[in-house]
Image 1 (cartoon, protein in one colour):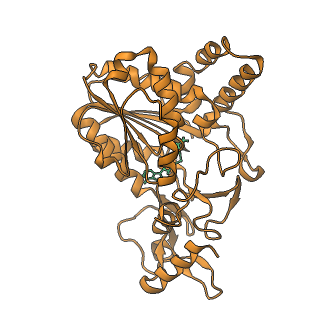
Image 2: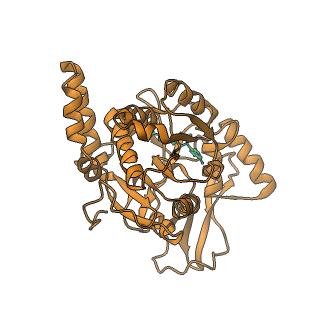
Image 3: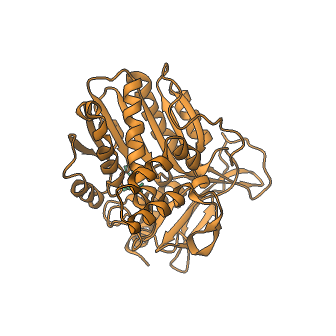
Length: 373
Ligand code: SAH
């Protein structure tokens, strides 16, 4: 049993069974044993690989997207460039380097890195040691000072905890984690249903609610609506709200039961883009998309960027550039974690933009968001 599992058992003994979102939050963010707080999980030796670690083109294009948005925002004298959950800092580093072609934007930027993990904060500090803009860190978005802003978030919302409700005979009952007699944790459901959920579905259906994501998005969108700006969210998930549980735990690229090794494995859930979009709109901002990552990156010039980089590359580097970009854009099913087939990153991942009213359609969102899953 992991140290965190023991702590969770003690909490359950004193407070009773805990909702799944509390369990997920402890797994990821417990101050001593939380997954992100104790390690750098990225890369081939870690538990998963993210887009900025696959290709520099990803961060570079997001940087140029931000510079473009600053210019359509009327080039405010100071703009906060905020990244939520920046991992190793690779995306921001690539973004700032690409923006050397827009020196006036760089001169206006204050970078704010929103990160809860001290290990990753240190890693980001090293990555951004030569950054050409002032960089500061905060553990949550509300600490970023007011003002016009551009927010980037790649694989951030999938790390925010979700609640599960199971359709039982007597209504929708919340999934709770309890202590099993055999010393293990187990998942059960609350005996009393949640009175506010009325959806019709067969017995046994699961409703996954990303309450923490909605709140985070609402906060970001309100700031954008009040001070002007834009946000770009890229994550894996679905464009339409649907029933079903999407939580996935990964340990060294292999799926495992999240109850088996709390704190030792990454736990994520697919992002429900339709409900993120509703949260942003309800806060007074405009929403664009979602579109697929492939569509978004292609529209903003991924292939042209790759060609430009290849002109100055050795043949081996050129092959790496091609394979990295191909992976980001791939829509063909491929073997994912544990060898299971999953859609390629290009279609599994979606992009959603949020802007203040009055701003034109942002680059990358020309394609109407029709029937993408
Ligand atoms: N964007 C990066 C990393 C994604 S992993 C990339 O694309 O490579 C998720 C990141 O979000 C990690 O840096 C993790 O420490 C951070 N994180 C998770 N929950 C957070 C929270 N509530 N507030 C701030 N950062 C968080």
